[in-house]
Length: 304
Image (cartoon, helix red, strand yellow):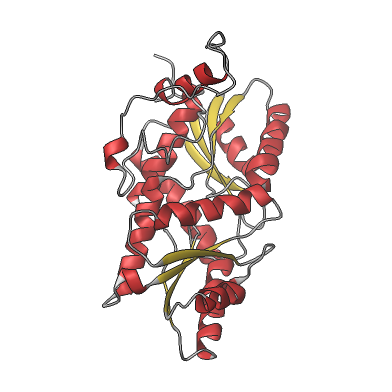
């Protein structure tokens, strides 16, 4: 029986001591949930321990193979560049180790249901149909990463009955929080819940809350409430494990997490497991079934 690869969790890093401790506590909890598996975690920047130290710790425990999972909601520069570069450097430092690399976490339905809970905690007597949600992401210089936050907002809106889910960012990208709130008001929103799209507490989520309060103070015509971050919920622990297993199997699928044919999304439950038919291209003369159409047939049936 070969030992399973170790699990290495890669975090952003934060200047906020409580945020860094939340990450470290999360890594410890993962270790407790999976006894017999080596689990370590480190940061790309700003807080200890650095990722390299976590790798050294695993190697010191006799680990030769590991799967690295980025504890990040969107695939921005860190997940696409910094972590792979750091891992490549560690491979040079520790000859003989090998690793696979997992996918970022969002916008997985399990996380959407935690976000829904966070909203429910602050809705109180508000009717969701009269509430506009402002989902606030970290913000990135990578347009694809910012687009993923918009995707999360759309998926959160689908089938849940909120008036709207709008999007803003706390750094590096427009619209910022005040502009996002202005947009909600211009669209006619009178009740807004600001929802931070962050895993753990930190300087940026606190800034989101502060900016929302400042904006609300100047706009008595709009009621604003702030929800909490996702936090170290059971769904998050399970999702990291799912990403670990994918990475170990080398099963890095296309984005199937929010596929209506695979996951029951609110209002689309009847689509789960439906057989997928190929899309035949109108220009196809019937002799090229192994071309465009055939490929589509495989995209859902085989992956799922």
